[in-house]
Length: 60
Image 1 (cartoon, helix red, strand yellow):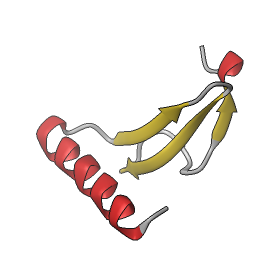
Image 2 (tube, rainbow, N blue to C red):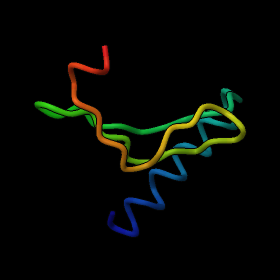
Image 3 (cartoon, rainbow, N blue to C red):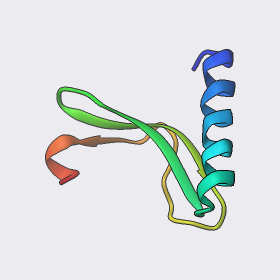
Image 4 (cartoon, rainbow, N blue to C red):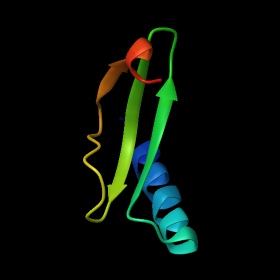
């Protein structure tokens, strides 16, 4: 991921964490056939991995 985009997404997740205060935040992208996890901020929350790609039919 582009370094500036990586820093921006992390900043957005950190801000959301301060405002909302939950343990796991992530940014994802829904494509035509797959769901991709782009960035994760996780503080002892669920196990979501950056870069994970899941077929759409397995996400719902």
